[in-house]
Length: 311
Ligand SMILES: NC(=O)c1ccc[n+]([C@@H]2O[C@H](COP(=O)([O-])OP(=O)(O)OC[C@H]3O[C@@H](n4cnc5c(N)ncnc54)[C@H](O)[C@@H]3O)[C@@H](O)[C@H]2O)c1
Ligand SMILES: O=C(O)C[C@H](O)C(=O)O
Image 1 (cartoon, rainbow, N blue to C red):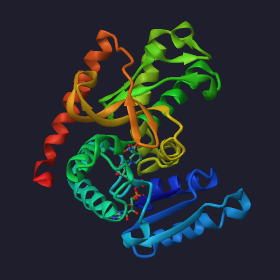
Image 2: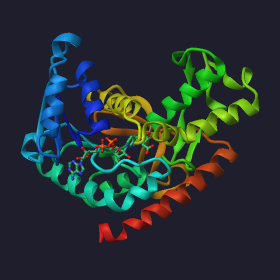
Image 3: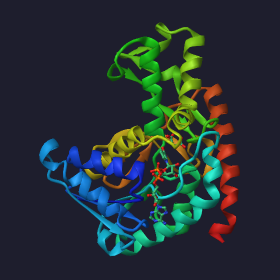
Image 4: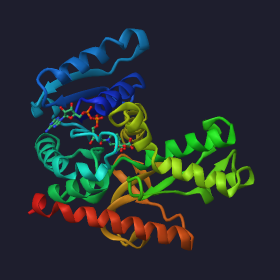
């Protein structure tokens, strides 16, 4: 199975690294516009093969899409990351042109690939990819919810003082500082609702910390995060390539689900060999439904900025 990652920067290279050492794909191609950069990252990752023990073939390409031919999955991480104090939404102007150009190029060589969109603002870039390529909606998936959920579980584990592996939880909605929706009501520790152990105040703080999880890291690092993002993309790619049918919150095209249409945003999906196998209706309560509608309003307003790119 072959995976192409366009954008060999922090997130793209981390994703290639995780896919390789976990043996998720037999071949990974990294592509970047910076001369020699993807080749260098691929060589560096490949030189881990004997120490971490993997057989994945990893290669790099400077903007030569013929090397990406017949990929099963293409991940788009090309674009600008935010700097401290910025929102993801401020990246739309520059990243829209990059993502559209990349999506057109990859499809020329991998017409059957499932596309995973990572570049920010991710929900809008996912919508753009779907509209610009005309691909069926099951083959365009935005990655954000897997990462936001892993941060939610991290903050829950801290508040509970229990291992992350014993905590479950999910974040839906937009992948933005104010649009994501941590589903605290459904979060659990070893199958028991977290409300059994945490006060409302503690749960509210976990949700607030989760929502600004990306901004917190951007403030600390000077650019946005990459280890958890790269690992979250690899987790999603694994479910596609190996037909694991995991339920993962992903940004996908909605046609009436969760009361929304003509928009891409995060909802729980079954992810398998066809990409989005189905969208799961988890029956939100009234407050969660209202949050989802508010989140959709903000995501939809952002999509309006695409008019010139899509014209
Ligand atoms: N969806 C998420 O959860 C999530 C998580 C982390 C980062 N991101 C986003 O992913 C993107 C990448 O982040 P990063 O930290 O890896 O940035 P980065 O700057 O480290 O890497 C981006 C790479 O894209 C390359 N690039 C730019 N234009 C290109 C083009 N036309 N073709 C090929 N390559 C091109 C650059 O040369 C660079 O190497 C950003 O937009 C960031 O906001 C999203
Ligand atoms: O925070 C960002 O800008 C990058 C990414 O969306 C993240 O959540 O880490």
